[in-house]
Length: 279
Image 1 (cartoon, rainbow, N blue to C red):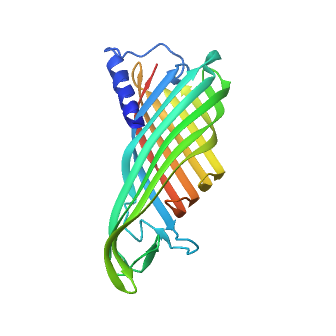
Image 2: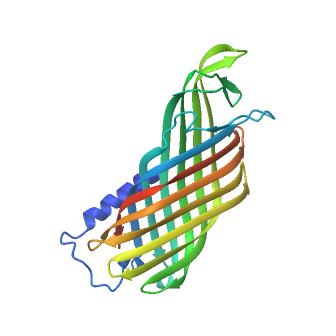
Image 3: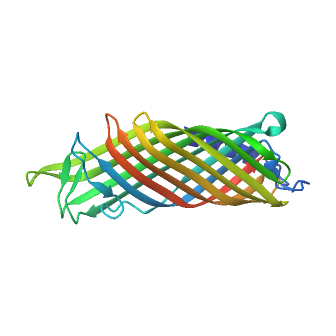
């Protein structure tokens, strides 16, 4: 749903852009002075997944889903962001971000593994997948704001949804019990604090950076999260620009819920190429 809202906003922005697309008469990048910014992009991610699923007091294997199960180490997926500034001199803002990565793979096991109480034997063929969806909502206030600079801090929420599975022949006392899909999932809304800094060195150029952090025990989760982005934007036309940035997301948590007892260390990092609109 959030993804559809981003796409609809971007389509509306493109349709409403004047045909001439002539540059405005501004001294520095207009994103610093405009109230609304939308970015629709694609991310090329380098993935790293280490996941554990336990049963009761029985601690399972910490499994590298890339090296052991062949889950893809690279993914391409949508990454959308939006920011609206309001209030006195536009010093207040609300920002949103959404991305979802669904990585899958398969492998012939080189060793026995235990997953959520099931045993998959060496030499058996298994498939596996890791899906993480992130929706971010962030409220902030600019501390330093002028024609060229915008530095601010704030707090927000990350809505995280994780699904992890392994499918293959399950062994019981060295005998096969048939093919089984062992799946765990969890979802949680986590609070976070963060900061951003935007700087325009010239009329059409913007350098930008942002960091979000969480570290605490909330609900079923105990761990930390980093969500960072840094890049450069070029204002090509009146309301349209192009952005190249680097996104880094790391979630390291222990989970204790009805659907999943275990832990995960997930890293997504890579370039994001976006088309931006500002008004």
